[in-house]
Length: 503
Ligand code: 6PG
Image (tube, rainbow, N blue to C red; front, side, top):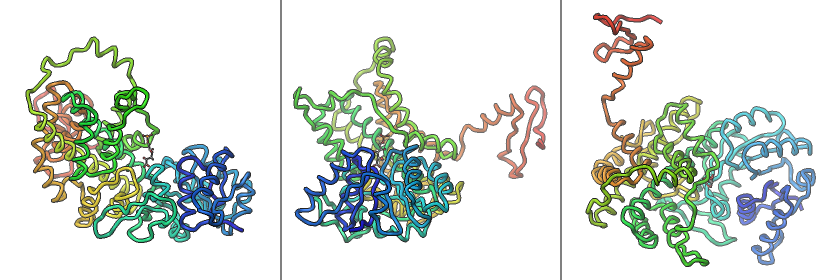
């Protein structure tokens, strides 16, 4: 029998995506350089298909993989981002892939690599990208998918990717949960929508991850205030997160944070979180988002601050040494009640979260203008409502905001979000002020507040900055009192009027 899809890369994500495809009735020809991974996928298929016909078929070479597929071929890659993607593409060309065959990259590829690949492989085969969020469970039972590139390729593969996507109940905006093999969810709105021209899907996924970094760091700062400031036990903090998960802060990341905090290590009988070394890893997508925000000039300080927080965490030895020599504040306790601090903290987390999303969405909007993409922000918020790591009820409110105004310059000025911050900001400010007084670092919280306060400032001190630049470098300045589009320079050491400077 011929297979519908060739699948290359059967690691954690790949195996689960392949099984998800199989659940949806597609026959898979599977290949991995590591044959044990293929065997593991075949075994899992055997376990799950309940005496039904085989759904995943092993291949030992690229040529065999192609020979097992219906034409035109569809091949999905789940290999590490970077060189392995091109390596597989070259091997498939050697094996005889044709111009109307499609290769779909599902990895966390750098979006500019995707753009280059599409151009490089043009005429050889159709290179298409579909960024995937949702970790292993999402891959297995429904992920959030961000496809972009050749529209014709998308029309051919759309039903397949919509089938394996997470689904949202259109009435509630909430995910339709699925946790068992077999019986895929067929109703609801699929979290897969065509994002745009080549590279845009991977760009959007990159920003998703930047927001994910910010979201995670904000939750960690909230945890730190409770753990270090209030000396609460992990279990107690988990209970707070569980409570918060029922309100505005409802999200997958809050939910899993509670689970992490509740986990007891079997060996020591201690909360596992107390044993995990405080050095954060990263694979690059948050950093790419921060870099892009600097290049595009779309301030994303909360995302960037989250990347810095991970970097600083890895300087463990330096921190331990510095902890013995650097002074902290004398004040150790503000004499506030625990309940009061926790209530303030909730609001601080919520307001900061709004700012992090506002930054991510504005970054996408400015990048889209620069690269000529037409992005549908309501659509993007909608496919993030289920399946992905940042899934949250909150994303429905973002979708609503962009449906009210698709040209919205910033989420902060949407009436709903503006109202939310107006309502909660005092507690946000108190949390940051109080944490600073007792020396608990809240880099992400405070970057979000500074972003908010800057964004709402009609006047910023950049007037002085322009004066400084003109002083030492004759870099010129515009006048606020004359809307004449002219640039002025003044001889700072001499009395006199600014003169128009023609460059
Ligand atoms: C997702 C995740 C996924 C991956 C991150 C982890 O959306 O499913 O973002 O892509 O888990 O890349 O990133 P770090 O290793 O950089 O934390």
